[in-house]
Length: 285
Image 1 (cartoon, rainbow, N blue to C red):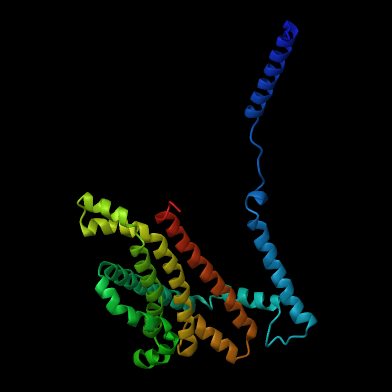
Image 2: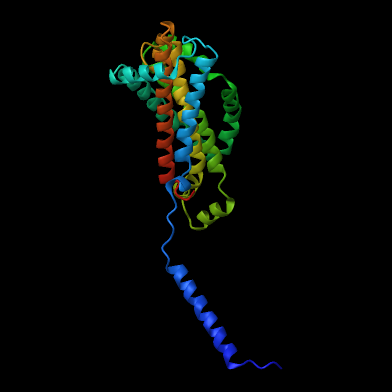
């Protein structure tokens, strides 16, 4: 048997104490600060992508000789946007479009939530309405715009109506799917606790369906915006869609293109608004 000397034990203890000191120094060292660019690279990549798109836009106009009546230069478009925004030319039409989008989206979302909830509670009602829902899904609802315009006039009513019709379907379908996705064990637990149908709906089924519902709400908001602008294209005396038609007929292409940035800002703002509500109510995701 090999004997371990006193010097060997002392050396082992010294190495252990040194390793403990190194470990303590490592743990007590302040954490390295990671730069914002490394933590959020999209903050740099997104502006770079925008710059690249503008350069490609300018190259298409300069190198390929595209007419400014077809594709205006970026500088001219930005000047038109700045001039129209600072002069307040877009204010009334923007308010008209935004008000109609929110009104139609609100009506369609609320109706879809109610109808989807009622259908989830009655299997017979779902089977009765399912063929009509399938037919309504495949129907080109934009084709209703001329008839609604003839029926309700050129004011806000037909725009709100078509926005509500198009917003209704995704919210209703997603609400129905989410409420039916609740597992049977959870429902049996609520029954064992003698919970009423109302309590089961608000305490179990609705919270479980919120991710589905918000997915439908996001889609409904996009579709409501498209429906509103399309309705203004086909028949209106106000709104951002009417302005695009008006600028195009006057060959003011730069002014018409400047409105695309307004549409982009409107869509992005709507998306982030819904995302904030999703984060607030679906906090577990």
